[in-house]
Image (cartoon, rainbow, N blue to C red; front, side, top):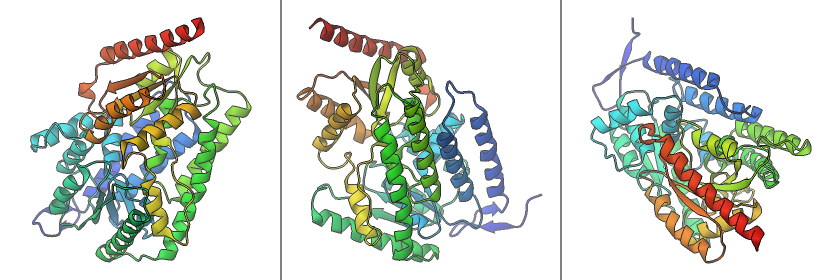
Amino acid sequence: MRKKAKFSQGKNIMIAETDRQEQRRFFSEQFQKRIKKSRGYSPLKSSIARERAMYKLLMESFRDNSTVIWKSTFFPSEIIYAMDAVPLYIESFSAIASAVGLSTKILHASDKAGFSKDSCTFLRGVMGASNNNILPRPDALVSSSYYCDGDPKIFDIFAEKYKKPHFYLHVPYETDTDESVELLAEQLEEIAFNLARETGKEFSVDKLGEIIENSNEAHINLQKAMEIRKQAPSVVLGGEAIDYIAGISQLWGSKQMVRISKLLYEELAERAENAYTPVEDEKYRLLWCHLRPYYNDDVFDYLEMEHKAVIAFENVNLITWKEMDPQKPFRSLAEKLLTSPGIGRSERMTASISKMVSDYKIDGIIWMASWGCRHFNSLSQVVKDSLRKEMDIPFFILDLECVDQTNYSGEQVRTRLDAFIEILAEKRQFAHIE
């Protein structure tokens, strides 16, 4: 028997009070399946802590007394934590759904609703999950103009559906001017106080400064961890490290992020001291650009275990910003956002990739071109052509879907990866002859 029902704001839709409890139970079961799933490696303690922190955040968003703010990729989670609300980076929901085998169901629901198959599957997945009533309902929404041009549009749809306010952060194209920093800082401050007003939460600049202290501590730990990863052979599998997505994690500002980053640094330092490497006889060091397939680990296992081609680093883990000033929180967050190489002129991304190639002793680059991601797909060939002018490094654009496993063909992917490894081998052999 269901408990007393309530009605959603602005719509005559009955929502039983037990719905969120059922959703929490459902995702708890999916998480347990994920934890028990066999892996081809022994995960770091920090990796397990990261998974549990993400699970806890999702569970918090299903509580009836939680204030949930849906955010797109680059809106700072620090602002949301500062008002004791739950940040839900909704694209990550599609990744979680794919990891536990739900992507086909929610993408099918999106298709039935008429959402274009040409769109990003992360956003299609969120739309399907919403239509299946397995998403925690938002109390407010906030999106930004980068990277994804689809975010603000789908947030408009959800704002209308849930009858909740949607705030929009416009990120200037020019990244290196003081005017851009000031414009962005002013927007962040305005949105912060508007979110607090609309959700009935308290917000203070002092509290935001305290939250930023958490981010600074995690920042130091992650920088030290990424410095260790410059060593060869690698001390961690790229297939595991990419899941940290340090550059866009919604855990920034939380105590959990501090603990996870500290664990990661300590574990990598211990491995380096003991000369431990998960791949014996490492042959090649690769740079992985963009995200990953979330439905399986096949690509990484094939590269790292079969070909001994280790993902030495991933551009999503690059720490591009300096420590922030808690006394100037909005300006500091604005400066942090503007350091991202994915915005502004394409030369910024090219320079960033070039530096990672040098820092991490990279032999080849794999750029994953995910279906519907127009921003990164358009950048791939531009960056490839630009890099060719300054260095001789194999650059492979791999068409591969992040969420939709029905588009995945293991044999085709392995064949293409084999061809890329042959290029690396020929290049090395030619270098030895010279």
